[in-house]
Amino acid sequence: MSDNQKKGGNDVLEFFIGLAMLCVGGYLFMQNVQVTTEHLFRFSIFGRRMDGLVFVPLIASIIFLFYKYNIVSKICCGLSLLLILANVLMNLRLTWSPTSLFATIVIFVMTFGGLGLVLKTLFANPDGDHGKNYKKD
Image (cartoon, rainbow, N blue to C red; front, side):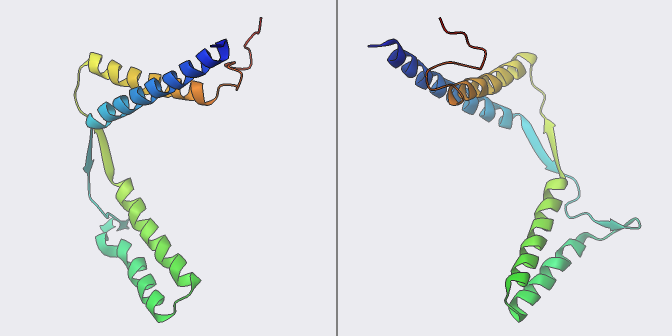
């Protein structure tokens, strides 16, 4: 078996080890993040809350969609759904649940170490050289 075949086998093994580390680290990270909301669909004008106002463009675009079915009505409906999705995402609050320093370090090492191994194998040169400053013998 040649040296290139051994190196190719190591790259595949490094890729799958890195992918496993990335998946485990990502899973542990997501287990420690709590997602809550504040006031969903909060919209205010001059200090007054207008909670349902975000649905007005959707209602108008649905009426327009059934009245005159064309590309403009589809775009308006899609943009109003995008506005509602943006409103929901802007009102999410992500917090890190209390955990030990050791667990936090393990999570970050698994996640970013796995990402480093995956990127190393994905962006390696075909002849096995890693990076532009690699010196050949």
